[in-house]
Image (cartoon, rainbow, N blue to C red; front, side, top):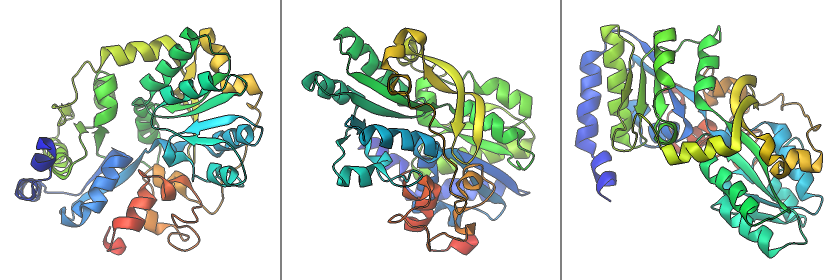
Length: 364
């Protein structure tokens, strides 16, 4: 528990808040990319403790939130057609166009909630007469385990295992946000867990191209306020560098073994993001050598396309244009128990964070 006690230290956190207050001279907009960081800011009350000149903007770093409706509908199509669908728990209540995976399970669908895709390979081995699909959602952080599940299934000669891929990548999303004419972001807090896998190399050209500080940051209160201080210090000095607040976990080169397994199974391609649209080269696709493990191709469900819910402003929330409480349906038609969109139901969603932890929405 060493790091939890150190990085949740109230006095140390207050000292960095004081440093921010003493350093800042003008308003700055800082986007935290990761939904885990958003929850850390909201549930620990940090948004209320920061100086008024610091405006935190919540980014699209919640993989469940950015998974498009059509991917959820594809998983539902499989589940309704006698396929065993395996998923992490945070996907099961996310609404598709008409229903959620949990609702299909309640009606008899064989949905398995797992902690690892390797468990899904075991299920496929134990059920040779059934097709088993793992709903492979996530950023770079979950890609190594999903790739390994394919390699394990190949090694075991399993023909009844495949994955429904919905992997998206953080740096292309950051660039898409910066290229948006509505963008008013002055600095980024980068996602520490993503960089633990991928390293920091991709961020140096971005910082130089857009003249914007990027601070790789952790998730505990002290991580967050230290990362904000480092960003504010750069902004006040007029410099733009990539800094690593999360050095206890993130190495500049990342995790070579994890990257090797990703590159063996996946290739980079275009991906659709919920509420944002297609971003070029922003996701992983299975390589041709592993096409037999591609559930979309295997079951012929690539054609499924659906429209986003017009009452949900998830796209504007994910791009940092609006805060969750600025949605007319927030806490009314849209709650965690009856969500209109993924940001209200995901454990990393900004809307869920505001709903559960914020007591003073007007000031946020």
